[in-house]
Image 1 (cartoon, rainbow, N blue to C red):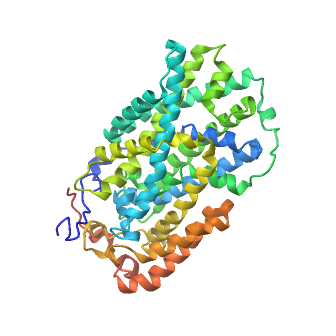
Image 2 (image 1 turned 180 degrees about the horizontal axis):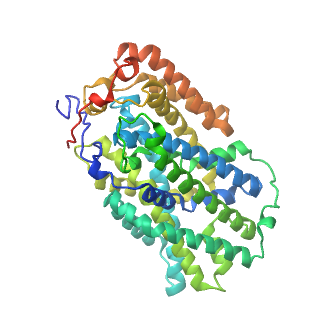
Image 3 (image 1 turned 135 degrees about the vertical axis):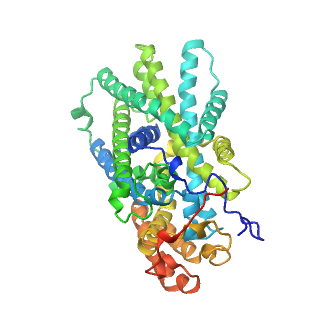
Length: 472
């Protein structure tokens, strides 16, 4: 069958085809290192500092652990798609939203990624500017934002192997310098952990809100977990029925890489906030060690640069890069997709909204929660981890639905997203549950009766019988 139909819908491109065994060269340890690199960034300490003093440091720590543990579980659950079938998020979402409808959740996912790329590029450039001013007396933040952005875009465009190699370099360095920074701030301000955690909260923010905010940093990654897990080494394939055997490496990497790193940087943010009264960690560093220890300040600012770089290339450029490829798979390669995503992230200048990080994370969580619910329901509850892989790449295949859009997904998405307006502090839970119930009901008792979905309706559907060749 042709790759493009009469309406110009294109579904195949070399960068979004299922990965084959020789491309699955990432070990569980390498994946853990990758996640450490993803999770160490300044949004986390900024968020913790901005939640204080409305919440106590202890409450913020609890919210961090709960929120990120939930995200780690979701990452593993949806990452199973990549482990078993080797396909990216942008391709899988066709099964639940339709061939054209898939662009809706794709764009919804890409927007926060390019936003954070621009924001974190600004943070890295801010640190670079501070170093340059200390050493030369010259400052040019705008120029450094552009240069730092270009370097990260090039690194990402080189592909997953280049990204993984950089994380091996950056992740250990970031963790070590992060611990040094924590100890130094506590020493300079004569703080102990007991003093930090003795502070109470002033109120005005609920724990539910804080948990949702903490989820907002990486709930985006739960959607596109397959973009990464499709490169994981595995001794089992799509025929392995045991979920744990397939995903145990993914689970431990997500849990320790994400939750551990987020906890460390939440503590750093809280310490900086309590000690200096500022939410900006770079300003806190300058206040704490600028005059007394300029060398250590430069080291810590270099840590900021590495942290933003390691997060941006994997979490904020790679996912939208694949999504942009999926818009025009025969015309745009992954490197070009990453370049486009990076340029957009810089042009929108998200650093202008730096004082509203918790609110932004809240909105992100709410808009993405319905997609998480739809994906989970489609893959686990309806298809029971069975995919008609070949049909995902056929322009007139079973996922065509109504004019290439699945009405069940659209109908489920709208009210579940709006529910967040009624229950903002628990918007993730309401949006997730409503989308799951609506999507399951609509698919089971309406869509599947009109559009044949053998993975859902045929108990004898066998994924072993599928033969798929990697084509461009």
